[in-house]
Length: 235
Ligand SMILES: [Zn+2]
Image 1 (spheres, rainbow, N blue to C red):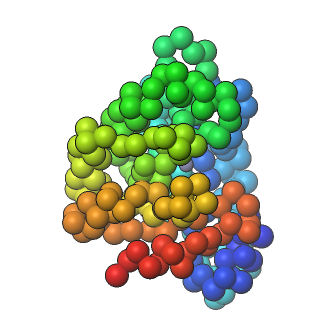
Image 2 (image 1 turned 90 degrees about the vertical axis):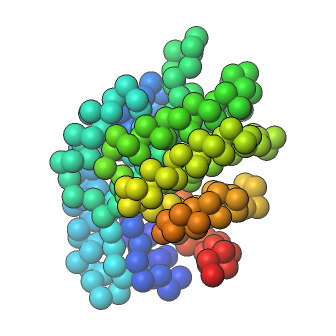
């Protein structure tokens, strides 16, 4: 975490918010999210860094909560018991008929991409956006993460008009609940465009929804990546 903070300072950022992953009830071969005990350590280290770097950079401690419709109450209880500087809402995993594990729809792994194609991108995205609509209504979120990032490693994926209708419903709820939309710059190396795409950004702007820049950094060097390009999107 300290390395991320140091890179943020080197890049001239005045504020950084960590968004570690929370998931509940997801069947997946290995854990790619924090347990509750891990979150204790995360807060302890985050608070130490807030003291060390006071006056140099503002450090926030947030969470990216992946929604699972089967564990809505449990997720809400876990979110309610801590004080977060940002609660990102996302959905990374879908439960699909005939699969023992949940399918990670953000994965670059060949086996997951193959399964996603087998179930059909249109169908998976229908479910994904429908689950996000439930998620923003069920959880105390403050920001919607990487909105159209699902199936990002299936280059043939295209959003249909029916997906855009779901996205419109989603954005209306985001606006009603006073949430923000993340402009996630990890899209640039994958598809030469941020998440969400320009059409969705236009829809969100029309609803006067505020944006937050996110670099989806999974390594310190990725902090603030492509923020010059993201900045150019905001008049
Ligand atoms: Zn995510």
